[in-house]
Image (cartoon, rainbow, N blue to C red; front, side):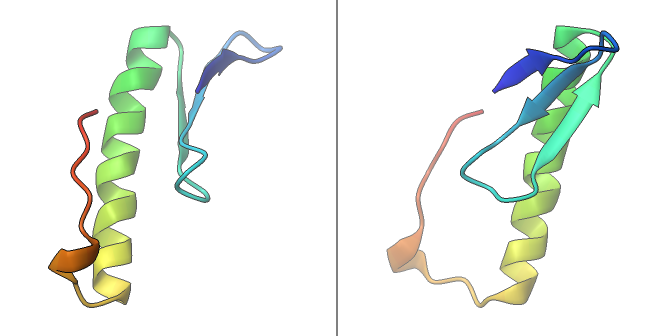
Length: 61
């Protein structure tokens, strides 16, 4: 989800990933930043829990 806040910033959030959000001064910048946030979120989650290929889900961002 990308929404513009009252200050004019674009705030991006991935509801399926708790705490995964970012922002930008433009919609495009917010989209680039949220992609980086998703990568970081996934890295942290993988470090917390052993990878189980049976539970893997492929997604395109």
